Length: 122
Image 1 (cartoon, rainbow, N blue to C red):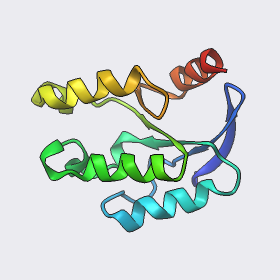
Image 2: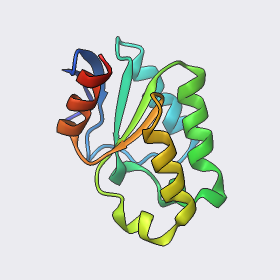
Image 3: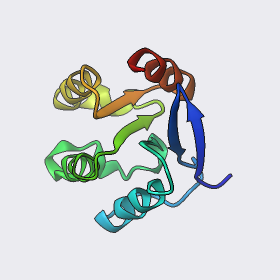
């Protein structure tokens, strides 16, 4: 499956293919944002596609990625199991908890949870 547009919870979501190219650089992020301009307001990125540096907050990659989405007024949702990363980093746990309290960046376990969250945000 390639990245595809789907309607979830009343929003148009660019759902990333779990087997798609890894997201390692700013250019990779901009490619996703460009694809979202086909009509998406939300980009659901499989956690497995994110370079491990995203989850090591000292690299600042997560902050750069999140800021790009904010700048382009797109909601970023990291979808998948990140429990191993959370177990290693209190700072990451805090970032995920804080992000999930707001509307711009979410960390969710699966697309069903995203559908529910978008319906509730409706």
